[in-house]
Structures are given as C-alpha cells and as structure tokens.
Length: 463
Image (cartoon, rainbow, N blue to C red; front, side, top):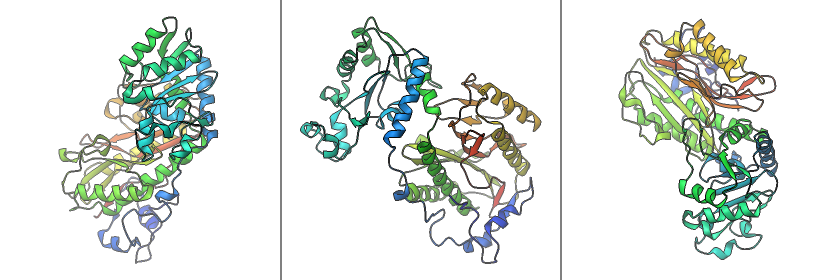
C-alpha cells in the first residue's frame, strides 16, 4: 500500500510529506488547522480508492492448510504425540480447518476429522437448520454453499449427535476409529495457556472422553499449537499486510479528524467507518488520554466511546486494529491534540520511536526471546527508563508477550515467519504517562520487517 498519509498536497503546493517531515528530530510537527480543507480528500477521512471489501482475500488455499498440518505434525513428533483433539470456538480449530464450529481430531498419521453441529453449517448458509438431508452425500458443501475441507475433501464428521453441544460420543467414536485407545493425546486449550493457565476446555466433554480411554494418556497441546501458529506462511502474511493497511486508514482518519473541540465519539465513528469501508469488517479502537478517566473506550472489550470533547494539549494514545479473515494487525501512533504541548511530549515520542527501531533492528531468526528481552532492557536503560516504568512492548497475540512481570516464552527462538502483532516500546513523560509508537512486524530470513508504511513521528494536530 502506498503511504496514504503522505500523498495529498495542500492548496499551497506543499505535500503532506513535506509538512510532516518538516519536524526535526525530537520536535513535534504542527499541522495547521487552516490547511486541512485543502488536503485533497474528496470524501470521507481515511478513504482509500484501492482498499475495499471486494479487494480483500476471502480464503486460504489448500496448500496453506497443508503447510500448517506439516508444521503441526513436526511438533507432534517432537513431543511424541499420536493425536490432537482441539475444542471448538478458538483460534486453534480455525487454524487447522478454517472453521471454529466443532471439535477437531488431528492424528499424526491419517485423516483429520472435524465434528460440527450440522445446524450451524446450515444456518451459516442461510438454510433451514433442521433440514439435515442437505448434509448427506459427498457434495453437501456445494449444495449449501459452505466449504468445510479436511485433507482436501468435505469433512466426513458432520454428525447429528453434536447438535446442542453433545460432543463426546462423536469424539470417542472418532478416536476409536483411528486406533487411539493407548495413544498419547494432546488436548488444545487444556492448561499452561499464556494468560489463561487453567485453559478453557469443557470439563464434562473431556471427562467423558478420558473415561472412555483409560489406557490413553492425555496432556496439554498448547505448546504444539502455539508454536505452529507463531510461524506465518506467505498467504497469512499477505492477509496481515492488508489488515495493517486497513488499520493505517483508521490512523489516517484520526490524524485528519482529531482537533480541539472534536468529541471522542465523533473521532471513533470516523475512524471506525474508514476501516469498515476498507475491509467490510469492524476494526477495534482503544483510546486513552492521560489524566482523563472518560477516555478509555475499547471496542475490543465492548465499551462505548464517550462524548468527551478533545482539549488543546490532550495526548491521544490509541491502539488501532484492522481485521481481515479473522486476522488483525495493530497500529500505535500517539498524537498531541492542539497546543501548548505538555512538557516532555516530543522527547518521549522520539524516545519511543528510537527504541522501536532499535528492537526492530535487533530481531532476527536464531535469537532467543531471552536475548530479545535483554536487548530491550538495555535500550530502556540507555534512554533513562527502567522495566518498571514501561508496559507490554512485545505482543504476539495468543503467543508470548514481554513487559513488566511478563516473561513469557523466554526459551523460544525467533523463527522466520514469526508475526508480532504489536511491537511498541513505551517511553514516559515527566507526568508519568506512557507514549508508545509501533505496530505490526514480521520476521524475514534477513531480520524484522515493519508492516506499516506510515512515518513514525510526533505530530501536534490543529495547533
């Protein structure tokens, strides 16, 4: 995606790139309100002529799923697991089959099965959820317009006894058919999950399955599934690039709209609309304004934007996430709204930007997370900060995170294809509030690559 933040020109012949790059290191650029009407956007803030719902990828190829299965089976072999059973509704099931509708039975050798409630499939296709006859026969997925492929074929485990969440009989039957009575079986989302140590598996379902196989061994498969999903394939990275571009449209809309006198609700709606028109999916936006309690809405948590009116000197800190095919990418670009700027704003902003690029340059395949953490601490110390005065700065979604009291995955080794949803080292202003610039990053064979295109810099809007 082209750098949408820097293309338009003002009526005075000054490009926005010229305007934004007019700030020297450590000094905030001031975007004059009088220039805004002539930036060249004919319609809505953040609008893009090239990003539309029709331009978004719709599904992954069978080759992509084969790549995932191979990676999972490599890790199963490493952990001596004969089979995985994965509960519905989470990222693990969607990762393996493209659908989170039911339990997945994933053997090291043999065909994969997914157990789903047929009514769920029919409802998703706009069909009568009780017309089960539509699901019979090898072409049922074509008949109802739903594609549920397992090993390149329609799933053979669409079964009526899953109706109403009665899963255990079908799981037991599938495990018996695959000869798992004495197997070592990994269970997804069972235990040891980052930030959810006790997992999220139905006790009743798992208890019935375990009792049916007294000679089998059941254990958590979190590590296998988590490590497999850390490594993204080219198709996944292409989706994440689209999601980042969508998030940057939200950021662009913020930069065009946030001014003293604008309500937080109006700003939120404008940004939300820009992302929705680009991808066809709602993005998520979290706002924070230091010292203003009314400024903590977060669409990811279902909280609404307040009617708070932005005031001159407010620092607007945000997390903006674009979504494509269930994948999301984050953009973090704090701004100052109006002047005078609070003490330390420009310095903290530049410190955060400098630290971001330092960690970005350090990341490379073969380095352990422990080394990454040690480098991060050195970068913080060089800027006069301590680990206790910052927050989570390395977020891999369901994978590890680094920050205060977060030392997850210290023994993991960085691999080509790793995706970091948000790399955002935080610097602190004298008032004690954090300023964190950054966003989505992917690891290549040569090092780390930032997915965002916008320039990271301190901006003062509407001064």
